[in-house]
Image 1 (cartoon, rainbow, N blue to C red):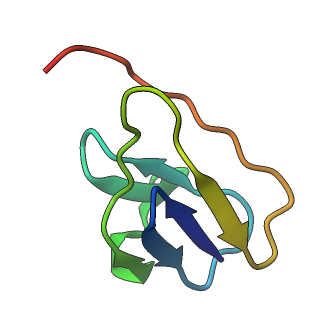
Image 2 (image 1 turned 30 degrees about the horizontal axis):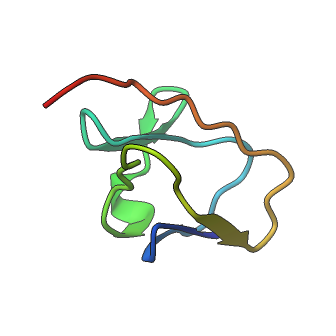
Length: 71
């Protein structure tokens, strides 16, 4: 599948089931298995205010849990 957030795309290949994309610690994983080697592109970053989110591929469910804080 491919996800695009604010015109920045990333892709995870060979996903069977769920995958967590954690932009804070720069890790992609399924349960305890690293998926970093299956990820193509940059980790997504949500900006302050509105964000454009698009996706393609066989995604049945997507949940975004932001960790808001000031820089």
